[in-house]
Image 1 (cartoon, rainbow, N blue to C red):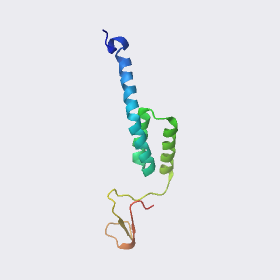
Image 2: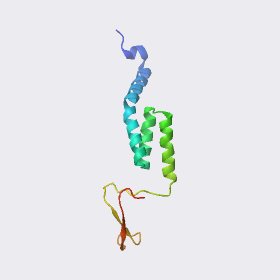
Image 3: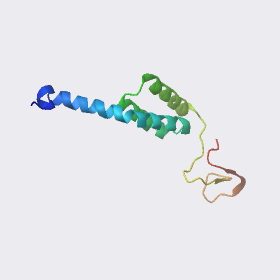
Image 4: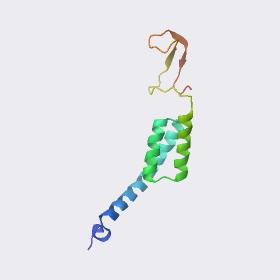
Length: 110
């Protein structure tokens, strides 16, 4: 009996293996893209878009992600998130030892 390598050749077999991997990875990439879109984190969204492109997600999904990324990059606003779910005290000046004000930023504040 002939092997798949003998029947198709090495390049075609590699391409078939990649296509199978992409099909298996698409649901995970799609979920990551949705999470990144919801979180609105530019770094996570960029990584999710790269993964989505690599596995061949639909153009509409890629376009939606690119549009949100473009909006985030163009926005002069930023969202506080230190990653540890703690607040940060607002200071009178941009120095670590400056006087603390009565205000503070909670995770997610814009």
